[in-house]
Amino acid sequence: MFCPKCKRLMRPDRAANAWVCPGCATRVKMGASREVGKTPPTGRGMETIEEGRQPTLPTADETCPKCGNAKAYWVLRQTRGADEPETRIFECTSCGHKWREYQ
Image (tube, rainbow, N blue to C red; front, side):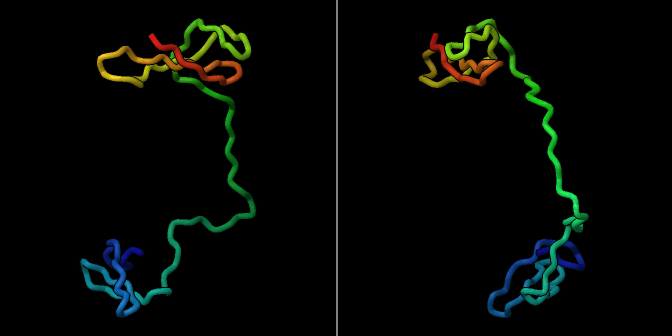
């Protein structure tokens, strides 16, 4: 709950059953709060539109072992000790199958 006067975060005072502002000492009875920042219902729900995957990862000419597609996204991760080479993780651009290549 935020203070209605100075807008600071209020702290609960369980003994007095109230919220207390540490800045201006304003007290608000618990249960008297209201939600702030929500838009009133308009009868329409929120819609999320996703136009498909827009990749930002680099691609490589690797054949997917599952579907045979010739392109895959890749990332490098250090999955073993620091003195060993990193692991390349591929994801098929067509079916989304993931596999690893240890160097």
